[in-house]
Image (tube, rainbow, N blue to C red; front, side, top):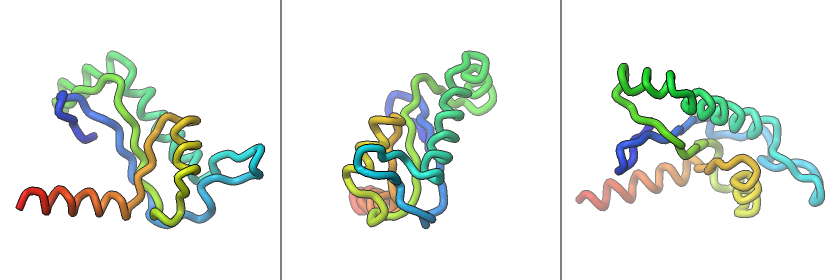
Amino acid sequence: MPTGIDGYADIVDFKLPILKSKPIVGNSTRSHPSFEIDSALAQVDEYEEWCSQEINQQWLFNTKNIRVKYPRKYLIIGHSKNFSPEDRQILRKRRDASIITYDELIAMARFQLYRLK
């Protein structure tokens, strides 16, 4: 659970970098997340639900010194070629989670490392 500048943590879940199917399936009028993506997002939603309970927030702070309140949700999965911009928007709108691919995660890490030099 990475902590932001405000001192509160967000939820990040890592899945495998290789997708077994397209992230969005169905036809143009009835598209929906694939089972693989939907399952991963359901797990992130479950973490958010757990973090929304006051007793769990207190436990995280008392045992791990992690503050959590209204966390943003991130799912790290697949590669950039797997997701079109439209796919990402559909997932963000329906599930309120940001999808970050391993390619993008590596690019962000490199940017931060080069920025420090």
